[in-house]
Amino acid sequence: MPNKTKLSGDQTAASPNYEKLVRFLIEPFLDNPQSLCVNSEVNQNKKKIWLRVAFDKGDRGKVFGRGGRNIQAIRTAIKTAATAHNDSVFLDIYSDEPAKSDDFGRRGSRDSGNARRRKSPAKPAPRIAKK
Image (cartoon, rainbow, N blue to C red; front, side, top):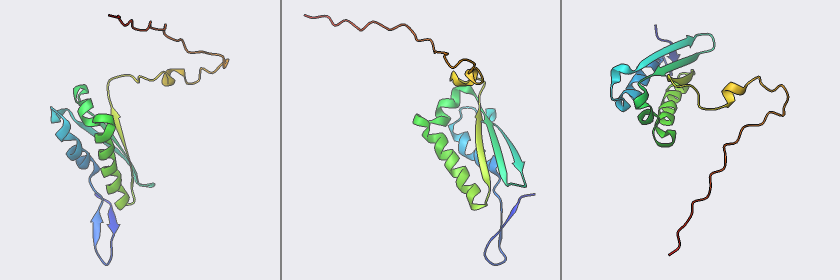
């Protein structure tokens, strides 16, 4: 049953179906829309909603867009709908790739403080042929 939001007078508006909204916003970017999987978790007490989205790895670039513009626009649209109904919505994108950052693997390994990152060997400068 959707949540009701009080409007002026005796009008009420139902909270939006965030799963359908996410599907509506993401499916146009996908080559195979059936690969889209949306899961939501709702905390009624604090009016927080977590949306978890997964899709094919090949469509990741299209959904995120250049510089992350597409996914940022999707998040803005979802947050705007949530703000209108006094909800907090968080959108998580899941993939089968491990995180690329070293920070995740190094948490809790601050035993000596002297740990240094290994540097890759310096590449030689390219030579320019003179005529």
